[in-house]
Length: 270
Length: 270
Image: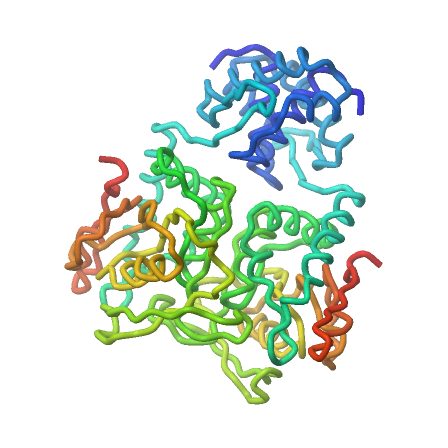
């Protein structure tokens, strides 16, 4: 397809946005748009400038025979903080209080525009880590894991609290559930995680940390290692064992008597 | 932010890609990039040509005082068919057979690059329908619902088979589960779906259709209506009541004796 430079730039930038963390050779673009590699190279310099000026992301050039360009999505600190601030206000709404110190947050984690931004913020927080997969526990963590995996361009892995025939053979571990006060089981399909993976564990809401610890022990069973733990929100009133984690938001107080939730920005912003 | 035309075009196209189905006024872009509305209008004409030539999507101009531009993502018929063909081959792999006529497909529905393409194909199939929300049942349908909702820029709604405290008050319906041969319950949080919504119901694998029928009866409880049903794959060997649906892939035979799965393109391609 032979097209004008301006149109070609639109298409190349669209391609890069849809293929984050992937190395694409200039030859691929040159052949696709029937243009000289030198022209493609100039296009990419312009796209790089535009993306970096607005902190949409970074374009890295890898030189040499197997070289090309890699797009790494990002978000500006200012936008990240603004998104977190908007979410903080939404999470503070008094009608979200549920019995047992829980908060209704399914609506925030089922709106694509929020999820995309949350995914970018969390991916940026772990930008110095090599991450091969994102792991979460069913059901509420799934959209969050999906959003982060989307930005990182890696698969996500869903741990279940029940055994489903559609998962094939599974590995299970026991964990101490803070909410039920009992020892529970969690299951992961044997095929779902490659041995030797570096895994980012995510969840929607961190209370006691039992499920996170359960997922960490699953990593050992899969000869895999922990790249980090990220949660949408934590409740700092809950006591928990020392797993280091990053939170987007932090619930500091739930006053069920007066129907007040206090929320601050999480430790990602410290 | 004052920038050069070529960079501005890259940023406007990035903005449109990230805000599908949203009306944005030319004034918004003009103010953002400190440019004349006439220049923005020319930029958009170029982006429109590029997007439409490669069938990335369509840009519609709404004239008048409250006007602006709307980006509708798409995928070319050729690419849709090619994606479906690749997925067909993957789904035919003999090691996917599970007991009970099920097929392991979690890996395909947990890879962002596949999900994005699947989302576009299904969204395009229902392009003539007004859709306010995408509904699915936990857990395996969630990434699919997320992917489609992402393209349509609408929220998704997760029906559960168990009662969770974190969902607040719920509405439940009974449905006939083909897999257990029993009457089961499904639950949907009262806050999760606005009355009067037009809903696209999606699921990963359609066998008897019991869960789909359950979700359809939930719609009535929420004074909402059905915009359509889409599944990643159906099993045409299963008998089911006449719910019209669209499938991306169709499993025509599972031969557990000889470990052979036959898969064809689904009825979306007819």
